[in-house]
Image (tube, rainbow, N blue to C red):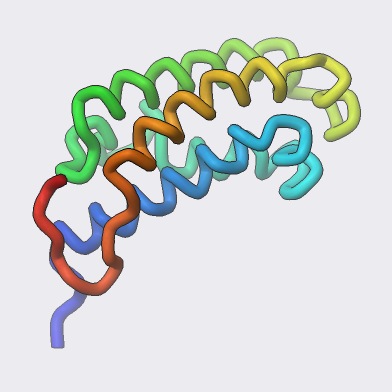
Length: 126
């Protein structure tokens, strides 16, 4: 039997993106939950301009969600320019997780309005 369809894969990717945004939306608690490296890297595993596939073209992301994810991506890039060598407590003390959380919460609310997709059955756009 073959692997999952492209649509199923995209539904799964959307769900993983939402999980990454949830961590960022948790601010300081997100850093404490996953550590300083994973705090950034989990998001960049799914949303990154250096990826071989373009996340902006996922059928499971609306144009509004793409714009909000781009804004969040830009905030993270700016944050990394000053925090790349910090440990978790230094990162928290910098105030960046709080600033990132404000943007991430907006993005998460937008994505939650359409919700998560099934990971085994193809669903139409919502």
